Length: 160
Image (cartoon, rainbow, N blue to C red; front, top):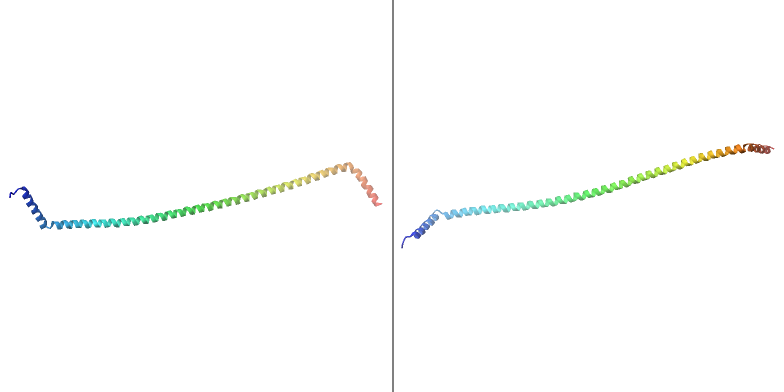
């Protein structure tokens, strides 16, 4: 058997494995791998916990968002109701004001009509009195002497 390079490489490999086993390198590698596995498992657990917390926070924020939307809708609905109520009150107040002003104008018109009618009647009475006075004055001038004579005769005949 010849001792060539392949043989010596094989012997070196066996010595290497013997040294590795003697110094318990596989145990060290196993412990290192176990520690790494433990770290990875811890990281996975931490990631799982963080994911659950994130989901819980997301659910909480979603619930709060829905509550805020609901509250906003309620506020908008209340504001619309208030605006409608205020509009109705304003319309009612406007109608009342228009009705009051209409009554006031109608009262003023009626008062003006009554005053005008009163003035027309007073003026008519003044004109009628003046016309009667003028008519009587004219008749008295024309028939004054005759009336006096006739009145004297009537008085005389009644006395007799």
